[in-house]
Image 1: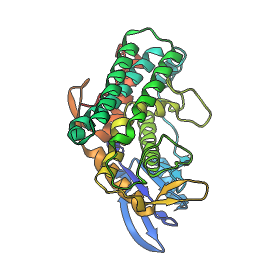
Image 2 (image 1 turned 135 degrees about the vertical axis):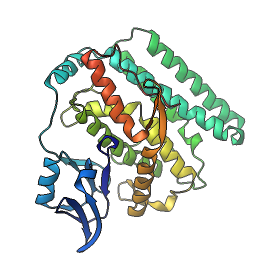
Image 3 (image 1 turned 30 degrees about the vertical axis):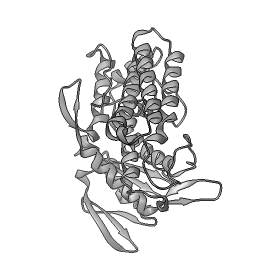
Image 4 (image 1 turned 45 degrees about the vertical axis):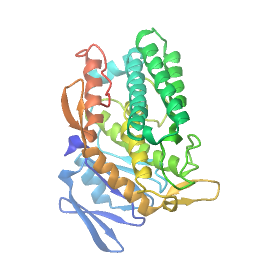
Length: 344
């Protein structure tokens, strides 16, 4: 269960979590709503004002179960965990590699751009016949430009700033055609560009929420193999930022998050009425819509895909853990390079 990053999400505001024996118990207004054995958990994530008992905090810390507190918008507030275990030699190797990160960053960027390209190609296969010829041509041109960026990154001896520039160029191209992938009949469910803190439209609200969940899983994966989640390669170090977890999620988010967000919108599981608009322009998921997304997220993580490097199928929820293992093996010298995860 732990390797699958089994996580309990608590979204009902003013719910109370307590320990009963060796179980986590969730109550709302004094009524028990759920009971989960602690040995089946790797993490607890709460949204908004949730009461967590001291006894439960102590039990989770002792069992290496992290408790992450997010506000009602999904923004990180705090993380409670017990003693952090880590291999000091592995972490020293990580810190040394962070001084000359070009090779690892190259692999991360190639993986991300390849998976962005795969998302666009999948859309052309699935809906190309229904698209206007001009839109098909526009998406096709972006697919080709992403392929050129990938070849440039793979073959050229770019420095770290150039690699980061290539990653940014690819992201701008990818999101420039993202609106063409949305097939919702609701006029409000359109893409006009990436907005964060706060998201300013429904699509960004879904993406930001899911990116938060993926960051949490990637951080847990880094810690599970003894890596320091705060010291990254692609993302610069910044106090309070899990830079390595953000690195790890870059190659995964086109497939795990962007594809899921598009599916929820295009299948009309999320409609314009599933979002609250706040003063100042912020757009947030309603409580019911958030539960819909969380259910879909957990189901998505159960789907299996072939890991090309390992030549074995694995659940998508296990991929962050596998990639953290691959990175640790590279840092130890067991692998010549970090192998990115490609969606096929």
